[in-house]
Length: 481
Ligand SMILES: [Ca+2]
Ligand SMILES: [Ca+2]
Ligand SMILES: [Ca+2]
Image 1 (cartoon, helix red, strand yellow):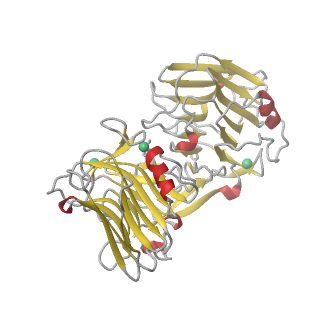
Image 2 (cartoon, rainbow, N blue to C red):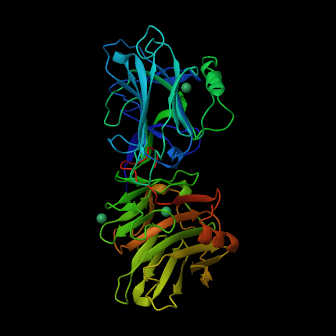
Image 3 (spheres, protein in one colour):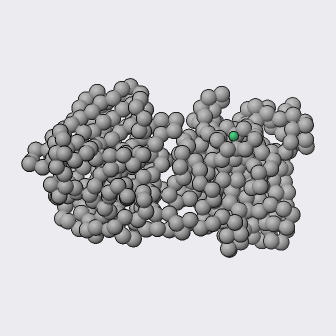
């Protein structure tokens, strides 16, 4: 049974799952510029960080990061990183802003595969790099080919020549404020209200925010940000979470933030067939799998559901059984839900075991391959719908049976295993092949929705509680998972 771990979390109040880790623990709360609170940042508490995820993905499009900062500097103080995103290795895409007090300026730097540009913003006053102990609004962003840096809306500098994408499907780093990854160039002072907008904010919009009353809601544009760290006390807290062994993770792109651990060194790839849509996750059949911790979103109870995934592998008549998906429990007496390829029986099969009964369904491969193991992509869908359990491959005729009555999960989540892809929860029956676009939806999708899902990867709506597109891998877990 996994232990409870204390994690210090800065909530993303925008609702885009970009909850940050408070580095070094929960920092002291200080009076805020927007709302009541802000955080203090110093070497033992070097800021807030979130690994890469869709909310941060600006690609080659326009965007604006804004944050409030307050510090006191002299010209002999070291450089201090205010914001660092996407990469910290020379030659990789990156975006950062640092105070350079010895040069009495801020410097913004953006690098893409097409090259790097930078822009300096001198402090027009007597202080070094805006280190006068007062709150200032920092903005850094992109408008077409221009990189723009401003303080308080009106003190601004920009440079042309920015082209290419700041984010990629490789292993980009996420966002950090208050230091450079590696806890370098630590800022010493206060930070408040970090936001990302996926468009270029205008000077008027920035000026309105810069002139907002202290402690107010900040005068931001009406359209919602892609990320918002408010630094308010009730969103800056330690939480006890059930955390399996920490490790690399891949983000959920549903609205439910059910990010997943990726085990065994597996990683998204676009080579050798890649994914069905974009990159896919290649599993080596040795020690690779995906693990989703159990939580309320995954507790299907006695309700309808849809499990859908793309899979691609090669099998022969003598290949072992291979798990695509396994949830909740293992063993004849346990509630469980699984989906696996059974090449020896030339079929894909599923089992649903509740507290009262067990039902299995299967689909036989009518073609020349064994259990759809022909090296091509296949779409597998398992549904519980109105008392029926049905399994279909590539939209073909389903294997169907009456679904068992009762619940597949318990109210008490501590005794329940999470969702595992590519292996049983105890590590057996590993899948060797690729997966893509895994989804768990808490209702039965209609035939039309399933066709749209299969043919165009259509969005399956807010009942989608897990959606793993396997486009990126974060080297560390997300704060809340
Ligand atoms: Ca605040
Ligand atoms: Ca491996
Ligand atoms: Ca994909």
